[in-house]
Image (tube, rainbow, N blue to C red; front, side, top):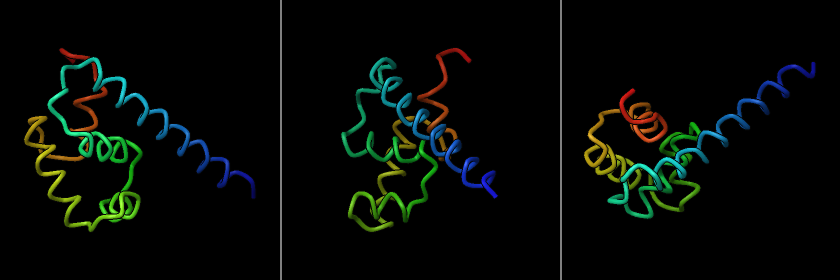
Length: 94
């Protein structure tokens, strides 16, 4: 009965920690070419959110988020959400 809520809370905590690591990685990885909005979106991506959830959090449309993601992917040289988060959370050379 308690297991499901505790598991969900643990997953949320891990996602928050990963999102925090994104900011630290961005600051130290030479990805300063990202806009403030792209960094916000990348943090929310690392938190495991959908386009609709990110749009709701930032008070924009999901289509706007999709366009931001296109630009973000191009700047990072990746083609997926997972690759974008991995690109900024993995140490160089891995």
